Amino acid sequence: MKPSVPVVEFADEYGNVCQRLIAPPGPFSIHTSADVMTSDTIDVISGYDQVACISDWIHRTLHSNPVFEYDYMSAIEVNQRREGVCCDFAHLGIALCRGLCIPACMVVGYLHGLQSINLHAWFEAYVNGRWYTFDATQSVPLGRRVTVAYGHDAANVAIFSQFGPALSPSVMQVSVELLEITPEGSAFL
Image (cartoon, rainbow, N blue to C red):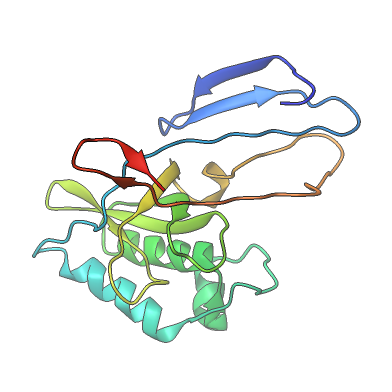
């Protein structure tokens, strides 16, 4: 951080690691990086067909529009408009799962290979004793996901929340690079 300010770190009710700080007036920047090991694929299992059908239906029925004029919509409004961003797809999937008494939660993070490098949203559903990943923006289950936060809905997984006068980031730069692991265990680009 430039300039350096005190930071309080805590875990929220979903287990996400959060940091709280007070940004000083004027230019302020935050930089972070991480090397993360993630699987090339996601787990699938028989018995989770209901949620897979929900995700597939959303994928076939809604139009993914990354430049969609985002406003906060309910799952009903997303279903009526038939278009939205990844967060809208995830909210609709969560609502449909919960309507069938299937526990579901919002997940945000990064998906390697996604054209628009930005925070991506998907959902997880609790099926057969564990949580599984579903992403209605994708036609096939994809791995290489880096999870940043879990929550009940988008309000719980914001990359940042601010209080006070409204400010917008002037620059936000995100990059995701695939590091290959050699048989000897060292990573290379």
